[in-house]
Length: 185
Image (tube, rainbow, N blue to C red; front, side, top):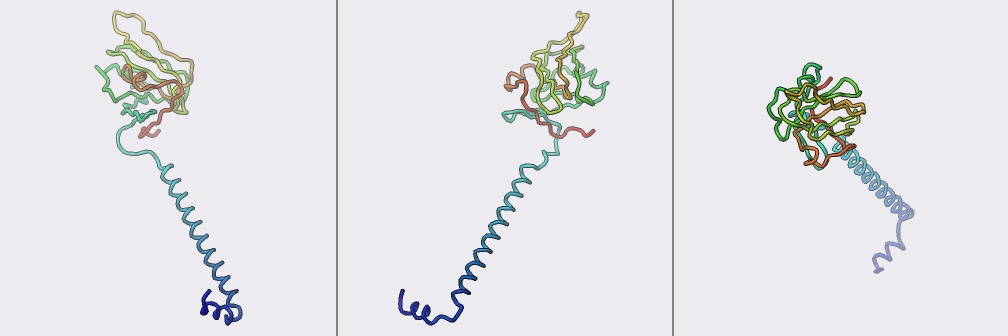
């Protein structure tokens, strides 16, 4: 400590040390408040970013693990569901047909009047794959009866994709499906 500092300390105004201590406490409190506000803002920003709604533009899509996504043709009416893919000569590689049912129950599917084999996915209302039928073959004349695919699980959705999609995408029962831009209702 040099002479000036010693002189200031010896001849300090009465109460100066108390005021200095109060100033330090006040500055410390301000720093704590600012840091708390910054932390709260970061937490709020993270919440907003991670809970932002899925994209709302573009076609309906189904996404699976490993960032595998396909565009969807969505059918919701019994008439459209009965026809399904029977009017299609093929299914584009990155496209599937999604059947949305009014409630989760056992859904029976067949391949009547189809021109190509497909993979079928039964998906629960929790968006988990409950059953996969790989390479379901078409039912065409001269066949007189068509195989009915009917897993014993209640499902809200059935997804039809090109044959081999389940294997190529490494998909299994209990995998999660994320839907984007599905029609409301």
